[in-house]
Image (cartoon, rainbow, N blue to C red):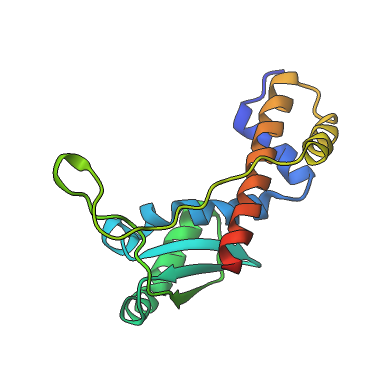
Length: 165
């Protein structure tokens, strides 16, 4: 019996009860594609908790503008991720820029922007993830699951660090 890799991964994630969490974390990474380049230049999705997407915005004017578009943004996200994945969006004005302006020859110029760095998981957490994956019979799917789970956990920790300031 042959099973498509995406079906096998989703089945495994569903079995471990993390499908909704994964889809909600995808909303953070899809932000720019959903809102477009203009809004993405002044905003950044930071995290999603309990169906609420938290977005940092350059200033209160943009926060108000995006608030007016909130219903449409939520609909677009849910169309891509599945009905009911995103319930609400909260905007927070931060006063910082999200993308460096490009100068001549594509070199960056102007103000500094902070770029968070992902840190590798400690060995014991990787071991825990590998133990969870032992229930997956197909070795290829098992390895994909392990890589995905490690990346998801590193990303969650990064988002938590960013949202704390």
